[in-house]
Amino acid sequence: MTWLTIGFCGIRLLGQGSLSLVSTVTVSISFVRNRGSALGLFSMGSAGGMALIPVGLAVVISSANWRTAWLVAAGAVLVTVVPIAWFGLRGLPTGTRGQSAEDAARLLADDSFERSEALRTRSFWMLAAVSTSAGMLSTALVFHQIDLLGDAGISKTATAVLFLPQVLGSTIAGLGFGLLADRVGIRFLPAAGMALLIAAMLLATVAAPGPIAVVYAIMLGAMGGGVRTVTGTLLPTWFGAGHLGSIQRFLTFLNVGSTAIGPVVLAVAQGWFGSYPPAILVLIVIPIAALLFSLSPDPRRRSMMTGRMTI
Image (cartoon, rainbow, N blue to C red):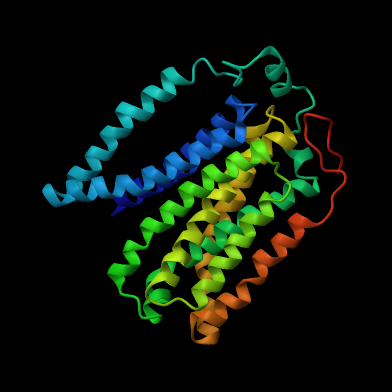
């Protein structure tokens, strides 16, 4: 049990936590032009991996055993992630390889925000509100999904199958939000992410076997993919790349905390009301507030490409 606990803590800390942070920051600093599209492709690949890897490991478990599956997973990390980290990133100490001199100068501008400066801006906390709302409530819904959809008459098998349209929604929205960020603009994309979350929560309150459950899964997945892409795009755009890792780290800390309390909050609310729909309707005020926050005028918010934001 001790080694199992250490192993899971390590996977969470070094895998889902550190590698996710490093990969997002690497993509963000490696692209100045078309950053949204790059992050959209990254989100699409991540969603595809999350869909395919469990299937592959399930095949290994069925043909061998769970211990062999863990060894196969460890071997896959050794032969893929480690070489990429050692050889692929050595030429990117500042994220300027393949960029023009003009783009590199923008990327390494001396007026990039330090973390303490970023935390004093309204724009950072708007992003934090959107990101933590997404993490908190999506985790809560997924954590309680079997009970939530079971109360609506959906079997456990059907609930498990809904993971596929959820991944599909995440894949499409991640790429779509990235393309919109590059070609249309980013002003309303955080609000669009919250609108998708609100729609998913409303569908969860009326979930039933059939199309409603599928649309709910697609909406929930689309929200996750869209918000991840928008957050990854906006952080370096608004605050520069000089201290991006430190700023992203603090936002990740907030996100991890929100995902930890989300299932607990929904469980407590469900206990108070006796069912999930009214509990979800109460919690829906969180994304509504984040949506309104993201839409509120902020004339001081502007891209780092044109000048330094004020508090």
